[in-house]
Length: 200
Image (cartoon, rainbow, N blue to C red; front, side):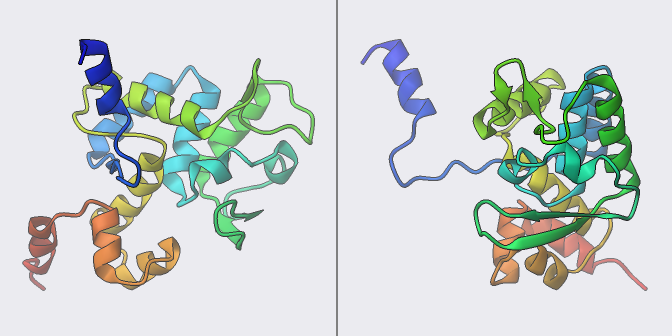
């Protein structure tokens, strides 16, 4: 087997196997990525929406200008999830609204345009994964990152930074058990133990 074939084998695991991507667990690293993307309104908006909602990348990429152009902080974004076909109402916070408005001022759009589109057309999930990997590499993060890392980052910090309950997060992610949610968010047993050591 040549070196090139070995690399291809590593990048393409056996059928049925799963590559687990990680959340961005450090708030400092999140701030560093924000600064990295500050002069790239579309990249910045994608990152901000991704880490401030639990939307999958495919659903973020389905957003059209007409759905968000008049929204304000606290308003809801209505969409149908591509994977589950469920209707969702997502409340948008101040950071998301600011990032969207900055993007709309930067680029000329028609109401029916996708929010995330370039010269070659609408962005794709593999393209988003490539971007997320690049951002994480640029700030020297070790690990495996991709488009799903944004959604996981939201969940991780809802639990670990904002102390949201596991039942609430289970409902947000459509999980059937707390263990599934903990595994999905890459929350390790020692981190859970540390939570229970907090005294009242």
